[in-house]
Length: 303
Image 1 (cartoon, rainbow, N blue to C red):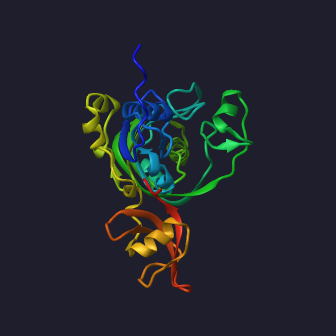
Image 2 (image 1 turned 135 degrees about the vertical axis):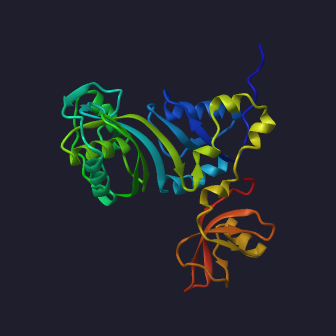
Image 3 (image 1 turned 90 degrees about the vertical axis):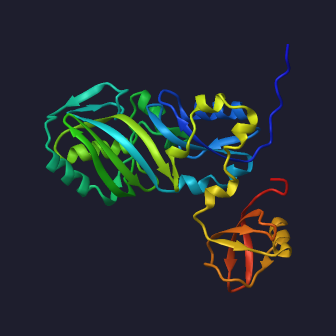
């Protein structure tokens, strides 16, 4: 019996194109197995119904995953008007029906009304926690938990296809947006119901699904070719300002000490920090009143 191959201590970001029909965690575990990675995590759940961009963080990259969780995202969503389902998508049973013959002008008006800063109530079928349990566990038991509306931002809604009862929209939104709830709220604007029939995440934090790889494509590659697809850990924070520090300051930060620095940078905000060799040290914040940098999130010494 052949021994199991050893796990590898690898660091980097994989842009994965998650398929329909499996959970984000199942996709993560498959990618982790292919890479034989010691540590792995993803940056934002996609429902089994949904496909598309799921950045996977290996090793040290997981330290910076929060900056992707908080980033804007883009989706392509297929809606069906005239019915509501228990889950807000095609997997749930139909619980109510209404007219499905809305016209394009009223749908355009609905999209315009829900563009900008709006308030949205998270769906029961979501991973949000209540008393330590995700809401979907309560929902599966028929228990409804009161949820508070949260402020979100919808930057743009584009109507890509419109053939009632079906429509396809492109959505560019801020963090915390639930597209199934947006579909239901768009329908409410036109006095009817709607649910999602398909959902695909097309972009997040400047990454596009066109850059992503499917599990099948990854499985067809050898280890060297797969490793070449990994982005460096600092790709997750490429949108943050960059500073370069001398080796003394870099060593101070790595040791948890304040680092003297006389450069110019936005104060009290995470900064991508690099040493004289161009190595990514991690994130530091500048305190101009003290003339120093303080570590925020660092790569490990062997990261």
